[in-house]
Image 1 (spheres, rainbow, N blue to C red):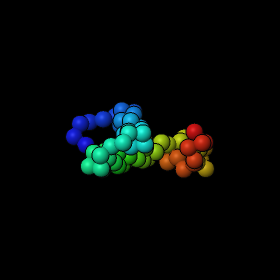
Image 2: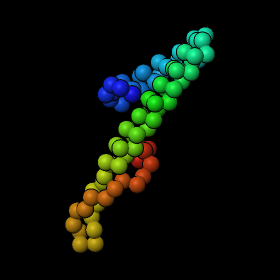
Image 3: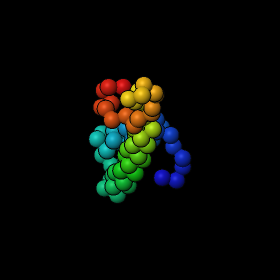
Length: 79
């Protein structure tokens, strides 16, 4: 990917490409290029989500009742 995208723009573009592949009768070469670009966007979005997940932290108390930051280890449903 040549241009810098944020997650939301990359996801919208990926959705557009998926729709094209599902609905349009693309020539094989164009379909393959569209698919390859979609894979790039998918990997970019997955990396963005991984980076965000690594940044999520929760505050808790240790045995001395002091606040400490811990990496969040729950499911996304627990947010």
